[in-house]
Image (cartoon, rainbow, N blue to C red; front, side, top):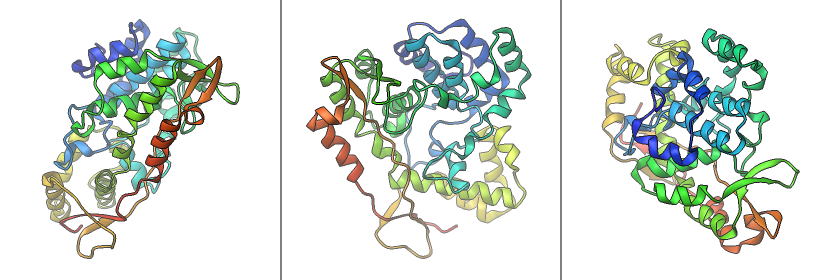
Length: 348
């Protein structure tokens, strides 16, 4: 296994790729990538009893997963490294900091430092120079459609966090390794409506199964408890920063657990005691009306979902264009609603 990754993921990673190329070990072992082993993919939900995440799944784990998917389908080192590096600029608590920046809809504000972090890494730049790879070829994974593309298309990044989310997030057991292997083995590279390469399925029934299975994963990321947890951490980090207890640079140098300790032990009792209540909370409350005297929010959230391509008699089609059941699954998700407000039983 690659240093810093969860050893329990060995079987999962072996499904994504039957080999881990040697260069991936070298790049993943750099200081900048190893930092990500201390940043959770689950955006702060590991630190409250409201959630029961099955395993600790780090940004490094996610990044390795994305890289392995890209390598499996392309065997292209540059694309694979771009996938590996795509979250290298992620701060502690991941998308919570997007919430802090007011970017809770697109959740992309934390990507801005990617090129700078890679370019300022002596270790990574030496490896890139050795491999005759330019910084620009690996610092923006958006240029590779297999790595990333626009919602609701299927890409390596979107596929990996759907798989790992279904496996591990909040112990919902929405996916298991056998199901992932079945779905993943049917994926190939197709040409989409724009003549661009995109991951898609070889068989209609498997594409239908993919959508039907993941329709239960997608609501996890727009649930009120997810939005409430992320916004609370965002507000806590902002208060800590405003009061001088942490700096924005700390979000890129300290481990999440180190920042948690600073919050728990800070001199401002309002911050520390409220955070301990957050840690011990085991449920949230929901309402159609705002609730005064409580930590109460109302956010729309980013709807993440996938409408994959499928090979239909030699032509690539969106599964929703040829399958009524898949179309209904997607529409049910897009039309689903949560209560307008969510709140904890404390104020902040």
